[in-house]
Length: 293
Image: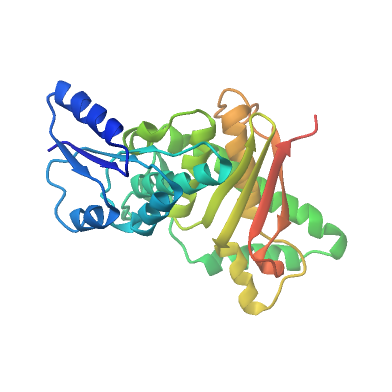
């Protein structure tokens, strides 16, 4: 079998799909209940190559979401019952799962402690190292220099995010694992980039809203920079890394051609942190807009 087809109550669509798959000279497994589908996912996937879910109503979509952790790590075609906002948001749970899983690359450090992956070199260091580094810088300057010090920390993350982000989205790993899931560029590229951001442990984050070429809103529900809460609630937002990287990702999407020298294309966007776990909010919120010329 090559195709698994799930259809909840639409026999016409089922028959059409069977005919289509047979014309391709491929086999097909058909399921009409989520209970039987869940049982199928408990068995080896065999030679299945793609999953097609034709969701007839919202109750079935809810049932599918309840078993999403069992679903095989295969390409999924999801046909939703309508295009209402809440329906699409629920459907994106599948997209998030696929992109995050395909983005997770097992990496090990070499003899020099560097991790070569996604076309760049990174290091794995304790979160406390970076948090302590930022904290010492901010706490060591007079009050009137705190904001300039924070700008420098954000800029360091911005430049790192710009060059590292470019390495990620042009790497062989990205092309093999993530690019097949991209339908609408550059917006889907941004969603995929933040899936990598999550998979690598920098922040459990997602894109909430995008106005192409103008604005992006990102929320982070867990990020290492919020660990400063272990020492008490911060007086001001301090997710410098996320601020810099989110702005850099928008540079890569809409700032023009990538410039390895950083003379153009970068700093076309800026990010403001409006909420933060470190200051007592439930999540961090980051709003990226065009930088003033």
